Image (cartoon, rainbow, N blue to C red; front, side, top):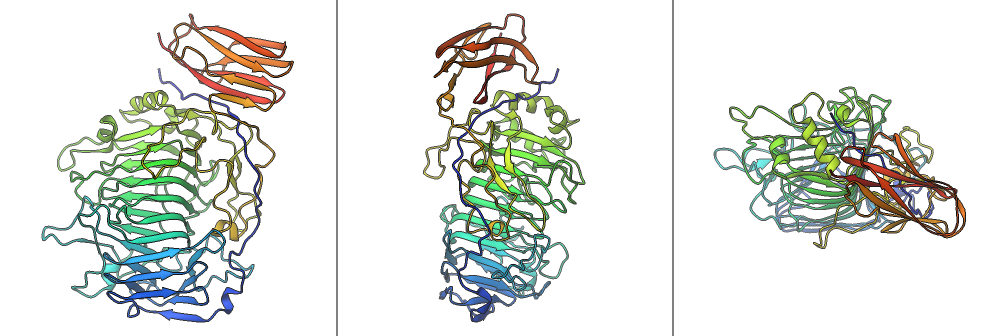
Length: 587
Protein backbone atom coordinates (compact mmCIF):
# COMPACT_ATOMS: atom_id res chain seq x y z
CA UNK A 1 0.00 0.00 0.00
CA UNK A 2 1.38 3.41 -0.94
CA UNK A 3 1.83 5.87 1.84
CA UNK A 4 1.07 9.56 1.59
CA UNK A 5 3.44 12.13 2.95
CA UNK A 6 2.42 13.74 6.24
CA UNK A 7 0.40 16.86 6.58
CA UNK A 8 1.70 19.38 9.07
CA UNK A 9 0.50 22.72 10.43
CA UNK A 10 2.86 25.25 11.98
CA UNK A 11 3.16 28.79 13.29
CA UNK A 12 5.59 31.52 12.41
CA UNK A 13 6.46 35.08 13.28
CA UNK A 14 6.54 37.46 10.36
CA UNK A 15 7.71 41.00 10.88
CA UNK A 16 6.10 43.54 8.57
CA UNK A 17 7.88 45.25 5.75
CA UNK A 18 7.08 48.30 3.68
CA UNK A 19 6.27 47.42 0.09
CA UNK A 20 5.37 49.46 -2.92
CA UNK A 21 6.40 50.27 -6.42
CA UNK A 22 10.01 51.37 -6.61
CA UNK A 23 11.87 52.67 -9.66
CA UNK A 24 15.21 52.01 -7.88
CA UNK A 25 16.86 54.98 -9.65
CA UNK A 26 16.05 58.40 -8.24
CA UNK A 27 16.65 60.28 -11.51
CA UNK A 28 15.19 60.08 -15.00
CA UNK A 29 17.22 57.24 -16.47
CA UNK A 30 16.06 57.97 -19.98
CA UNK A 31 17.48 61.51 -19.68
CA UNK A 32 21.01 60.26 -18.96
CA UNK A 33 23.61 60.49 -21.72
CA UNK A 34 23.97 57.26 -23.72
CA UNK A 35 27.20 55.47 -24.53
CA UNK A 36 27.09 52.84 -27.27
CA UNK A 37 29.32 49.82 -26.66
CA UNK A 38 30.46 47.39 -29.36
CA UNK A 39 32.70 44.34 -29.37
CA UNK A 40 35.78 46.42 -30.15
CA UNK A 41 35.53 48.40 -26.90
CA UNK A 42 36.77 45.90 -24.26
CA UNK A 43 39.91 44.16 -25.44
CA UNK A 44 42.30 41.69 -23.82
CA UNK A 45 43.95 43.16 -20.73
CA UNK A 46 41.77 46.30 -20.62
CA UNK A 47 40.18 47.73 -17.48
CA UNK A 48 36.92 49.48 -18.35
CA UNK A 49 34.49 51.23 -16.00
CA UNK A 50 30.82 51.98 -16.59
CA UNK A 51 29.24 54.61 -14.33
CA UNK A 52 25.68 55.39 -13.32
CA UNK A 53 25.76 58.83 -14.93
CA UNK A 54 25.35 57.18 -18.34
CA UNK A 55 23.11 54.59 -19.95
CA UNK A 56 25.19 52.03 -21.83
CA UNK A 57 23.77 50.62 -25.07
CA UNK A 58 24.96 47.14 -26.09
CA UNK A 59 25.17 47.12 -29.89
CA UNK A 60 25.62 43.51 -30.91
CA UNK A 61 27.77 40.95 -29.12
CA UNK A 62 30.04 42.67 -26.56
CA UNK A 63 32.81 40.44 -25.19
CA UNK A 64 34.96 41.22 -22.17
CA UNK A 65 38.12 39.50 -23.36
CA UNK A 66 40.77 37.46 -21.57
CA UNK A 67 42.51 39.34 -18.73
CA UNK A 68 40.15 42.30 -19.12
CA UNK A 69 38.02 43.66 -16.24
CA UNK A 70 34.66 45.38 -16.59
CA UNK A 71 33.71 47.48 -13.54
CA UNK A 72 30.07 48.58 -13.28
CA UNK A 73 29.05 51.16 -10.69
CA UNK A 74 25.97 50.70 -8.50
CA UNK A 75 22.90 52.27 -10.11
CA UNK A 76 24.13 51.82 -13.67
CA UNK A 77 21.62 50.91 -16.38
CA UNK A 78 22.65 48.92 -19.45
CA UNK A 79 20.25 48.54 -22.38
CA UNK A 80 20.54 46.28 -25.42
CA UNK A 81 19.65 47.14 -28.99
CA UNK A 82 16.91 45.35 -30.93
CA UNK A 83 18.55 42.80 -33.20
CA UNK A 84 18.65 39.03 -33.43
CA UNK A 85 20.46 36.18 -35.14
CA UNK A 86 24.09 37.16 -35.86
CA UNK A 87 23.34 40.77 -34.89
CA UNK A 88 21.84 39.98 -31.48
CA UNK A 89 23.06 41.96 -28.49
CA UNK A 90 24.51 40.24 -25.43
CA UNK A 91 27.27 40.70 -22.87
CA UNK A 92 29.86 37.91 -22.68
CA UNK A 93 32.57 37.73 -20.01
CA UNK A 94 35.10 35.43 -21.65
CA UNK A 95 37.19 32.82 -19.87
CA UNK A 96 39.99 34.60 -18.08
CA UNK A 97 38.11 37.92 -17.88
CA UNK A 98 36.27 39.46 -14.90
CA UNK A 99 33.14 41.48 -14.28
CA UNK A 100 32.82 43.52 -11.08
CA UNK A 101 29.18 44.62 -10.93
CA UNK A 102 28.34 45.51 -7.33
CA UNK A 103 24.97 47.17 -7.02
CA UNK A 104 23.05 47.76 -3.82
CA UNK A 105 19.46 47.20 -2.72
CA UNK A 106 18.83 50.92 -3.27
CA UNK A 107 20.91 51.18 -6.45
CA UNK A 108 20.79 47.92 -8.38
CA UNK A 109 22.55 47.42 -11.69
CA UNK A 110 19.94 46.85 -14.39
CA UNK A 111 20.39 45.08 -17.72
CA UNK A 112 17.36 45.44 -19.97
CA UNK A 113 16.07 46.14 -23.47
CA UNK A 114 16.31 49.42 -25.34
CA UNK A 115 12.50 49.31 -25.32
CA UNK A 116 12.30 49.43 -21.51
CA UNK A 117 11.56 52.95 -20.26
CA UNK A 118 12.25 52.16 -16.64
CA UNK A 119 11.79 55.69 -15.26
CA UNK A 120 8.17 55.88 -16.34
CA UNK A 121 5.08 54.01 -15.30
CA UNK A 122 4.87 52.59 -18.83
CA UNK A 123 6.78 49.45 -18.04
CA UNK A 124 7.16 46.49 -20.31
CA UNK A 125 5.25 43.46 -18.97
CA UNK A 126 6.70 40.03 -18.33
CA UNK A 127 5.15 38.92 -21.63
CA UNK A 128 7.69 41.16 -23.41
CA UNK A 129 10.25 38.40 -23.51
CA UNK A 130 13.13 37.71 -25.88
CA UNK A 131 14.09 41.31 -26.65
CA UNK A 132 17.87 40.81 -26.43
CA UNK A 133 20.37 38.06 -25.65
CA UNK A 134 21.42 38.09 -21.99
CA UNK A 135 24.54 37.85 -19.82
CA UNK A 136 27.05 35.03 -20.34
CA UNK A 137 29.87 34.28 -17.91
CA UNK A 138 32.53 31.80 -19.06
CA UNK A 139 35.09 30.28 -16.71
CA UNK A 140 37.81 27.66 -16.35
CA UNK A 141 36.15 25.23 -13.90
CA UNK A 142 35.62 21.59 -14.79
CA UNK A 143 32.66 20.28 -16.75
CA UNK A 144 31.92 16.67 -17.71
CA UNK A 145 31.77 17.53 -21.42
CA UNK A 146 35.12 19.20 -21.83
CA UNK A 147 35.29 19.04 -25.61
CA UNK A 148 35.29 16.96 -28.74
CA UNK A 149 37.64 14.20 -29.93
CA UNK A 150 40.24 16.82 -30.86
CA UNK A 151 40.15 18.16 -27.27
CA UNK A 152 38.62 21.44 -28.37
CA UNK A 153 36.75 23.16 -25.55
CA UNK A 154 33.00 23.36 -25.47
CA UNK A 155 31.53 26.62 -26.76
CA UNK A 156 28.33 28.47 -25.92
CA UNK A 157 25.89 27.77 -28.73
CA UNK A 158 24.92 30.79 -30.76
CA UNK A 159 27.91 32.85 -29.64
CA UNK A 160 30.22 30.49 -31.53
CA UNK A 161 28.13 31.00 -34.67
CA UNK A 162 28.60 34.76 -34.52
CA UNK A 163 32.37 34.59 -34.05
CA UNK A 164 34.68 33.85 -37.00
CA UNK A 165 36.50 30.52 -37.36
CA UNK A 166 39.40 30.26 -34.96
CA UNK A 167 37.96 32.77 -32.48
CA UNK A 168 38.03 31.00 -29.08
CA UNK A 169 36.15 33.59 -27.01
CA UNK A 170 33.03 31.39 -26.77
CA UNK A 171 34.97 28.54 -25.09
CA UNK A 172 34.45 27.54 -21.46
CA UNK A 173 35.69 24.95 -19.00
CA UNK A 174 39.09 23.93 -17.67
CA UNK A 175 40.66 22.42 -14.57
CA UNK A 176 40.36 25.20 -11.97
CA UNK A 177 37.21 24.72 -9.87
CA UNK A 178 38.11 27.85 -7.85
CA UNK A 179 38.37 30.05 -10.93
CA UNK A 180 36.87 33.54 -10.60
CA UNK A 181 34.85 35.39 -13.23
CA UNK A 182 34.36 38.28 -10.81
CA UNK A 183 31.44 39.59 -8.73
CA UNK A 184 27.80 40.28 -9.52
CA UNK A 185 25.66 41.55 -6.67
CA UNK A 186 22.23 43.25 -6.79
CA UNK A 187 21.90 42.81 -10.56
CA UNK A 188 18.53 42.65 -12.34
CA UNK A 189 18.50 41.09 -15.85
CA UNK A 190 15.29 41.73 -17.79
CA UNK A 191 13.55 40.74 -21.08
CA UNK A 192 16.26 38.43 -22.44
CA UNK A 193 16.19 35.23 -24.49
CA UNK A 194 16.30 36.32 -28.14
CA UNK A 195 17.67 33.82 -30.67
CA UNK A 196 21.34 34.47 -31.40
CA UNK A 197 23.64 33.05 -34.02
CA UNK A 198 22.71 31.41 -37.31
CA UNK A 199 20.65 28.45 -36.05
CA UNK A 200 17.16 28.35 -34.58
CA UNK A 201 16.92 27.32 -30.94
CA UNK A 202 19.93 29.31 -29.74
CA UNK A 203 18.01 31.36 -27.22
CA UNK A 204 20.34 32.14 -24.35
CA UNK A 205 19.19 32.52 -20.78
CA UNK A 206 18.87 35.59 -18.63
CA UNK A 207 22.12 34.40 -17.04
CA UNK A 208 24.26 31.72 -18.70
CA UNK A 209 27.13 30.24 -16.69
CA UNK A 210 29.65 28.12 -18.60
CA UNK A 211 32.32 26.41 -16.50
CA UNK A 212 32.20 29.22 -13.91
CA UNK A 213 34.23 28.55 -10.78
CA UNK A 214 33.59 28.88 -7.07
CA UNK A 215 35.83 31.95 -6.85
CA UNK A 216 33.02 33.92 -8.50
CA UNK A 217 30.50 35.75 -6.28
CA UNK A 218 26.85 35.78 -7.41
CA UNK A 219 24.39 37.26 -4.91
CA UNK A 220 21.05 39.04 -5.28
CA UNK A 221 20.56 38.24 -8.97
CA UNK A 222 17.23 38.50 -10.78
CA UNK A 223 16.35 37.00 -14.16
CA UNK A 224 13.01 38.45 -15.25
CA UNK A 225 10.93 37.77 -18.39
CA UNK A 226 13.42 35.66 -20.34
CA UNK A 227 12.29 33.99 -23.55
CA UNK A 228 14.26 30.93 -22.44
CA UNK A 229 15.58 29.79 -19.04
CA UNK A 230 16.12 32.05 -16.07
CA UNK A 231 19.59 30.66 -15.40
CA UNK A 232 21.53 27.74 -16.82
CA UNK A 233 24.68 26.22 -15.34
CA UNK A 234 26.91 24.42 -17.86
CA UNK A 235 29.17 22.56 -15.45
CA UNK A 236 31.39 24.45 -13.05
CA UNK A 237 31.19 25.06 -9.32
CA UNK A 238 29.87 28.61 -8.99
CA UNK A 239 27.61 29.34 -6.00
CA UNK A 240 24.45 31.45 -6.21
CA UNK A 241 22.69 33.06 -3.25
CA UNK A 242 19.52 35.18 -3.19
CA UNK A 243 18.29 34.47 -6.70
CA UNK A 244 14.98 35.40 -8.38
CA UNK A 245 13.78 33.68 -11.55
CA UNK A 246 10.49 35.32 -12.49
CA UNK A 247 8.10 34.74 -15.39
CA UNK A 248 10.63 33.13 -17.72
CA UNK A 249 9.07 31.18 -20.58
CA UNK A 250 11.15 28.01 -20.27
CA UNK A 251 12.81 26.51 -17.20
CA UNK A 252 13.34 28.79 -14.23
CA UNK A 253 16.54 26.92 -13.30
CA UNK A 254 18.53 24.54 -15.52
CA UNK A 255 21.78 22.74 -14.75
CA UNK A 256 23.87 20.54 -16.99
CA UNK A 257 27.35 19.14 -17.77
CA UNK A 258 28.39 18.28 -14.23
CA UNK A 259 27.38 21.39 -12.27
CA UNK A 260 28.50 21.07 -8.62
CA UNK A 261 27.87 24.46 -7.00
CA UNK A 262 25.79 25.55 -4.04
CA UNK A 263 22.61 27.59 -3.85
CA UNK A 264 20.49 29.15 -1.14
CA UNK A 265 17.43 31.39 -1.14
CA UNK A 266 16.25 30.73 -4.70
CA UNK A 267 12.82 32.15 -5.56
CA UNK A 268 10.92 31.06 -8.66
CA UNK A 269 7.54 32.29 -9.83
CA UNK A 270 6.16 31.24 -13.20
CA UNK A 271 3.64 32.93 -15.47
CA UNK A 272 0.19 31.77 -16.53
CA UNK A 273 1.05 31.92 -20.23
CA UNK A 274 4.39 30.12 -20.69
CA UNK A 275 6.65 28.10 -18.40
CA UNK A 276 8.76 24.96 -18.43
CA UNK A 277 9.96 23.17 -15.32
CA UNK A 278 10.77 25.14 -12.21
CA UNK A 279 14.02 23.18 -12.38
CA UNK A 280 15.31 21.00 -15.20
CA UNK A 281 18.31 19.13 -13.84
CA UNK A 282 20.52 17.33 -16.35
CA UNK A 283 23.75 15.51 -15.72
CA UNK A 284 25.45 15.94 -19.06
CA UNK A 285 25.10 17.55 -22.44
CA UNK A 286 26.69 14.62 -24.22
CA UNK A 287 28.44 11.62 -22.63
CA UNK A 288 26.49 10.94 -19.43
CA UNK A 289 29.14 8.49 -18.23
CA UNK A 290 31.84 11.14 -17.80
CA UNK A 291 32.81 12.57 -14.43
CA UNK A 292 32.45 14.87 -12.59
CA UNK A 293 28.80 14.00 -12.16
CA UNK A 294 26.39 16.84 -11.50
CA UNK A 295 25.65 17.18 -7.78
CA UNK A 296 24.75 20.72 -6.65
CA UNK A 297 23.36 21.43 -3.18
CA UNK A 298 20.41 23.81 -2.77
CA UNK A 299 18.85 24.95 0.51
CA UNK A 300 15.82 27.22 0.97
CA UNK A 301 14.23 27.35 -2.45
CA UNK A 302 10.65 28.51 -2.97
CA UNK A 303 9.34 27.41 -6.36
CA UNK A 304 5.85 28.68 -7.27
CA UNK A 305 4.51 27.36 -10.57
CA UNK A 306 2.15 29.00 -12.99
CA UNK A 307 -0.92 27.99 -10.98
CA UNK A 308 -2.47 24.60 -10.37
CA UNK A 309 -5.55 25.56 -12.38
CA UNK A 310 -3.59 27.20 -15.22
CA UNK A 311 -1.93 25.51 -18.18
CA UNK A 312 1.03 27.62 -19.26
CA UNK A 313 2.59 26.52 -22.52
CA UNK A 314 5.71 24.47 -21.85
CA UNK A 315 7.57 21.27 -22.66
CA UNK A 316 7.87 19.96 -19.12
CA UNK A 317 5.20 17.99 -17.32
CA UNK A 318 6.83 18.21 -13.90
CA UNK A 319 8.05 20.91 -11.56
CA UNK A 320 11.35 19.12 -10.80
CA UNK A 321 12.99 16.92 -13.44
CA UNK A 322 16.16 14.93 -12.66
CA UNK A 323 17.65 13.17 -15.70
CA UNK A 324 20.80 12.31 -17.67
CA UNK A 325 22.60 10.89 -14.63
CA UNK A 326 22.38 14.03 -12.52
CA UNK A 327 22.44 13.97 -8.76
CA UNK A 328 21.77 16.94 -6.54
CA UNK A 329 20.19 17.99 -3.26
CA UNK A 330 17.20 20.11 -2.33
CA UNK A 331 16.73 20.70 1.37
CA UNK A 332 14.40 22.93 3.42
CA UNK A 333 12.51 24.06 0.33
CA UNK A 334 8.93 24.71 -0.88
CA UNK A 335 7.45 23.41 -4.15
CA UNK A 336 3.90 24.47 -4.95
CA UNK A 337 1.16 25.51 -7.41
CA UNK A 338 2.35 23.79 -10.59
CA UNK A 339 0.73 22.82 -13.87
CA UNK A 340 1.53 23.08 -17.59
CA UNK A 341 0.16 21.99 -20.94
CA UNK A 342 2.41 18.92 -20.63
CA UNK A 343 1.17 17.89 -17.16
CA UNK A 344 1.19 18.82 -13.50
CA UNK A 345 3.55 16.48 -11.65
CA UNK A 346 5.83 17.56 -8.82
CA UNK A 347 8.80 15.28 -9.40
CA UNK A 348 10.27 12.79 -11.85
CA UNK A 349 13.56 10.95 -11.47
CA UNK A 350 14.69 9.42 -14.75
CA UNK A 351 14.62 5.62 -14.85
CA UNK A 352 15.86 4.08 -18.13
CA UNK A 353 16.81 0.54 -19.02
CA UNK A 354 20.59 1.27 -18.76
CA UNK A 355 21.51 -0.56 -21.95
CA UNK A 356 23.72 0.40 -24.86
CA UNK A 357 25.62 3.66 -24.57
CA UNK A 358 23.48 4.91 -21.65
CA UNK A 359 24.32 2.67 -18.68
CA UNK A 360 23.68 5.38 -16.09
CA UNK A 361 20.60 7.36 -15.04
CA UNK A 362 19.39 9.59 -12.23
CA UNK A 363 17.71 6.65 -10.52
CA UNK A 364 21.20 5.30 -9.85
CA UNK A 365 22.30 8.64 -8.44
CA UNK A 366 19.26 8.44 -6.14
CA UNK A 367 20.02 4.89 -5.05
CA UNK A 368 23.63 5.65 -4.11
CA UNK A 369 22.69 8.79 -2.19
CA UNK A 370 23.86 11.40 -4.70
CA UNK A 371 20.29 12.65 -5.18
CA UNK A 372 18.65 13.76 -1.95
CA UNK A 373 15.39 15.57 -1.18
CA UNK A 374 14.99 16.22 2.53
CA UNK A 375 12.72 18.34 4.73
CA UNK A 376 10.83 19.92 1.85
CA UNK A 377 7.23 21.15 1.66
CA UNK A 378 5.13 19.98 -1.34
CA UNK A 379 1.63 21.13 -2.24
CA UNK A 380 -0.66 22.10 -5.10
CA UNK A 381 -0.06 19.98 -8.19
CA UNK A 382 -2.54 19.50 -11.00
CA UNK A 383 -1.86 15.75 -10.95
CA UNK A 384 -3.12 15.63 -7.34
CA UNK A 385 -1.77 16.07 -3.83
CA UNK A 386 -1.12 12.42 -3.07
CA UNK A 387 2.50 11.41 -3.73
CA UNK A 388 1.28 8.44 -5.77
CA UNK A 389 -0.19 11.05 -8.13
CA UNK A 390 2.61 13.60 -8.29
CA UNK A 391 5.81 11.49 -7.99
CA UNK A 392 6.97 9.38 -10.98
CA UNK A 393 3.54 7.86 -11.73
CA UNK A 394 3.71 4.52 -13.50
CA UNK A 395 7.46 4.08 -13.07
CA UNK A 396 9.03 1.15 -11.29
CA UNK A 397 10.88 3.24 -8.72
CA UNK A 398 7.87 5.29 -7.59
CA UNK A 399 7.31 3.57 -4.26
CA UNK A 400 10.99 3.69 -3.34
CA UNK A 401 11.00 7.45 -3.89
CA UNK A 402 7.81 7.94 -1.88
CA UNK A 403 9.16 5.85 0.99
CA UNK A 404 12.36 7.88 0.92
CA UNK A 405 10.48 11.20 0.99
CA UNK A 406 8.37 10.08 3.95
CA UNK A 407 11.43 8.94 5.88
CA UNK A 408 13.35 12.14 5.22
CA UNK A 409 11.14 14.86 6.59
CA UNK A 410 9.17 15.81 3.48
CA UNK A 411 5.70 17.21 4.10
CA UNK A 412 2.56 17.57 1.98
CA UNK A 413 0.68 20.60 3.25
CA UNK A 414 -0.32 24.04 2.05
CA UNK A 415 2.70 26.35 2.63
CA UNK A 416 0.24 29.24 2.97
CA UNK A 417 2.14 31.69 0.79
CA UNK A 418 0.74 35.11 1.73
CA UNK A 419 -0.09 36.20 -1.81
CA UNK A 420 0.50 35.20 -5.43
CA UNK A 421 0.09 37.66 -8.30
CA UNK A 422 0.81 36.58 -11.88
CA UNK A 423 -1.09 39.25 -13.79
CA UNK A 424 0.91 40.99 -16.54
CA UNK A 425 -0.51 44.19 -15.01
CA UNK A 426 0.13 43.48 -11.31
CA UNK A 427 -1.51 45.14 -8.34
CA UNK A 428 0.80 44.45 -5.37
CA UNK A 429 -0.62 40.97 -4.83
CA UNK A 430 2.63 39.00 -4.54
CA UNK A 431 4.01 38.29 -1.08
CA UNK A 432 6.16 35.14 -1.14
CA UNK A 433 6.46 34.84 2.66
CA UNK A 434 4.50 32.08 4.39
CA UNK A 435 1.76 33.29 6.68
CA UNK A 436 -0.88 32.17 9.17
CA UNK A 437 -0.42 28.62 10.45
CA UNK A 438 2.10 27.68 7.77
CA UNK A 439 4.27 24.63 8.39
CA UNK A 440 7.24 26.54 6.99
CA UNK A 441 8.56 27.52 10.44
CA UNK A 442 7.80 24.48 12.57
CA UNK A 443 8.38 21.45 10.37
CA UNK A 444 11.68 19.67 10.91
CA UNK A 445 14.61 21.15 9.01
CA UNK A 446 17.77 19.64 7.57
CA UNK A 447 21.04 20.66 9.19
CA UNK A 448 23.04 23.32 7.36
CA UNK A 449 26.66 22.63 6.40
CA UNK A 450 29.19 24.70 8.34
CA UNK A 451 31.12 25.82 5.30
CA UNK A 452 30.79 29.60 5.36
CA UNK A 453 28.31 29.73 2.48
CA UNK A 454 25.00 28.56 3.91
CA UNK A 455 23.04 30.69 6.38
CA UNK A 456 21.27 28.74 9.13
CA UNK A 457 17.68 30.02 9.21
CA UNK A 458 14.63 28.80 11.19
CA UNK A 459 12.31 28.26 8.22
CA UNK A 460 11.95 26.30 5.00
CA UNK A 461 11.67 28.09 1.68
CA UNK A 462 13.38 31.22 0.42
CA UNK A 463 11.63 33.70 2.72
CA UNK A 464 10.96 33.99 6.41
CA UNK A 465 10.06 37.30 8.04
CA UNK A 466 11.86 39.43 5.46
CA UNK A 467 11.31 39.87 1.74
CA UNK A 468 14.92 40.28 0.58
CA UNK A 469 13.78 40.86 -3.05
CA UNK A 470 12.31 44.29 -2.27
CA UNK A 471 13.80 47.44 -3.77
CA UNK A 472 16.18 46.06 -6.40
CA UNK A 473 14.10 43.71 -8.55
CA UNK A 474 11.85 44.20 -11.54
CA UNK A 475 9.20 42.37 -9.52
CA UNK A 476 9.21 45.26 -7.10
CA UNK A 477 9.62 48.01 -9.69
CA UNK A 478 6.62 46.99 -11.80
CA UNK A 479 4.34 46.56 -8.79
CA UNK A 480 4.12 42.85 -7.98
CA UNK A 481 5.13 42.97 -4.33
CA UNK A 482 2.64 43.80 -1.60
CA UNK A 483 2.68 43.62 2.19
CA UNK A 484 0.09 40.91 2.76
CA UNK A 485 1.61 38.71 5.46
CA UNK A 486 2.12 41.38 8.12
CA UNK A 487 -0.17 41.00 11.10
CA UNK A 488 -1.49 37.58 10.13
CA UNK A 489 1.00 35.40 11.96
CA UNK A 490 2.13 34.23 15.37
CA UNK A 491 5.42 33.42 17.02
CA UNK A 492 7.54 30.31 17.02
CA UNK A 493 10.67 29.18 18.84
CA UNK A 494 12.93 26.20 18.27
CA UNK A 495 12.06 23.19 20.40
CA UNK A 496 8.53 24.37 21.16
CA UNK A 497 5.98 25.84 18.80
CA UNK A 498 4.82 28.80 20.85
CA UNK A 499 1.59 30.77 20.69
CA UNK A 500 2.61 34.05 22.36
CA UNK A 501 1.62 34.23 26.01
CA UNK A 502 -0.77 31.37 25.42
CA UNK A 503 0.61 27.84 24.93
CA UNK A 504 3.66 25.77 24.05
CA UNK A 505 3.55 22.38 22.33
CA UNK A 506 6.57 20.11 22.87
CA UNK A 507 7.89 17.34 20.65
CA UNK A 508 6.54 14.00 21.83
CA UNK A 509 8.87 11.74 23.82
CA UNK A 510 10.07 9.19 23.01
CA UNK A 511 10.10 9.66 19.27
CA UNK A 512 10.11 7.30 17.41
CA UNK A 513 7.94 5.31 19.82
CA UNK A 514 6.36 1.87 20.28
CA UNK A 515 3.55 1.73 21.25
CA UNK A 516 3.17 4.69 23.67
CA UNK A 517 4.52 8.22 23.83
CA UNK A 518 3.99 11.35 25.92
CA UNK A 519 2.98 14.80 24.68
CA UNK A 520 3.40 17.97 26.78
CA UNK A 521 1.42 21.19 26.50
CA UNK A 522 2.26 24.27 28.57
CA UNK A 523 -0.48 26.81 29.24
CA UNK A 524 0.21 30.34 30.41
CA UNK A 525 -3.45 30.86 31.31
CA UNK A 526 -6.70 28.93 31.62
CA UNK A 527 -8.29 28.31 28.25
CA UNK A 528 -10.10 25.91 25.89
CA UNK A 529 -7.73 23.26 24.55
CA UNK A 530 -8.15 20.42 22.05
CA UNK A 531 -5.26 18.00 21.44
CA UNK A 532 -5.88 15.38 18.76
CA UNK A 533 -3.95 12.79 16.72
CA UNK A 534 -4.35 12.33 12.98
CA UNK A 535 -3.03 9.99 10.30
CA UNK A 536 -1.08 11.25 7.29
CA UNK A 537 -4.31 11.76 5.34
CA UNK A 538 -5.55 14.14 8.02
CA UNK A 539 -8.15 11.76 9.51
CA UNK A 540 -8.64 12.14 13.25
CA UNK A 541 -7.86 8.91 15.10
CA UNK A 542 -7.71 10.03 18.74
CA UNK A 543 -8.62 12.98 20.97
CA UNK A 544 -6.30 13.26 23.98
CA UNK A 545 -7.54 16.52 25.53
CA UNK A 546 -10.75 18.43 24.83
CA UNK A 547 -12.04 21.11 27.17
CA UNK A 548 -11.09 24.04 29.37
CA UNK A 549 -7.71 23.46 31.04
CA UNK A 550 -6.03 25.44 33.86
CA UNK A 551 -2.67 27.20 33.48
CA UNK A 552 0.32 24.89 33.84
CA UNK A 553 1.58 21.75 32.12
CA UNK A 554 -0.65 19.07 30.62
CA UNK A 555 0.88 15.63 30.09
CA UNK A 556 -1.05 13.49 27.58
CA UNK A 557 -0.24 9.87 26.81
CA UNK A 558 -0.91 8.40 23.38
CA UNK A 559 -1.25 4.62 22.96
CA UNK A 560 -0.83 3.40 19.36
CA UNK A 561 -1.15 -0.32 20.09
CA UNK A 562 -3.83 -0.79 17.44
CA UNK A 563 -2.10 1.22 14.72
CA UNK A 564 0.44 0.35 12.04
CA UNK A 565 3.93 1.78 11.79
CA UNK A 566 4.22 5.15 10.14
CA UNK A 567 4.08 8.87 10.66
CA UNK A 568 1.27 10.54 12.61
CA UNK A 569 0.37 14.16 13.36
CA UNK A 570 -0.68 15.57 16.72
CA UNK A 571 -2.55 18.85 16.59
CA UNK A 572 -3.13 21.46 19.29
CA UNK A 573 -6.02 23.91 18.87
CA UNK A 574 -6.52 26.92 21.17
CA UNK A 575 -8.01 30.40 20.85
CA UNK A 576 -4.59 31.60 19.71
CA UNK A 577 -4.48 29.26 16.71
CA UNK A 578 -3.45 25.78 15.66
CA UNK A 579 -0.05 24.12 15.72
CA UNK A 580 0.94 20.58 14.76
CA UNK A 581 3.94 18.29 14.99
CA UNK A 582 4.75 14.87 13.58
CA UNK A 583 5.70 11.68 15.39
CA UNK A 584 6.79 8.28 14.14
CA UNK A 585 5.50 4.89 15.27
CA UNK A 586 7.99 2.06 14.69
CA UNK A 587 6.85 -1.46 15.50
